[in-house]
Length: 146
Image (cartoon, rainbow, N blue to C red):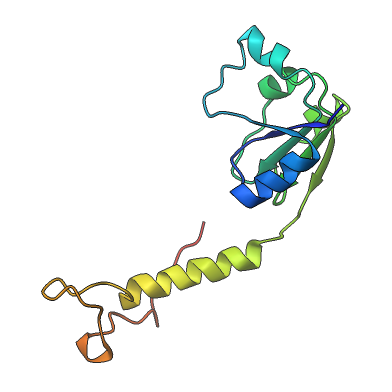
C-alpha cells in the first residue's frame, strides 16, 4: 500500500510527478468543506501533510485527517505545536531555508520597478535603451518589509 500525502498547494509539475511516483498525492482544494463527512472518509488514510509558510493548519483540518502522523512544513513553523503534539503528529520544518532567495528576489523586483527595466516605449513599442531614461534610483528611499 502506497503512502498517502496531502499537499496544501500545487507543486511545480516536475516535483509533483516525482512525488507522485513515490506515493499517492492529494491536493487540498481551496475552500474544501471540512465538515462534509465525505472529506473525512476520503482522506482517512492521509498520513503526511505538506504545507508552506503561506498555509494555515487548524484543528478542523487535523480532526478530519485521522491517520495523520507527520506535517512536513516548508519554512519556519510559527503555529502552535501543542495541538499537533496532543494528536501524536510530528512536525518537521525547513527553518529559514529560502529566506535569502526570497530577499534577493524582492530586491530584484524593487530595482526592476524603480529603474523601469523592460518597460516598452509606448510610442514605438521597442525596449528602452540607456539614452531613453533609467527610471529612479533606490538610493535614499525608505523601504518597509513585512
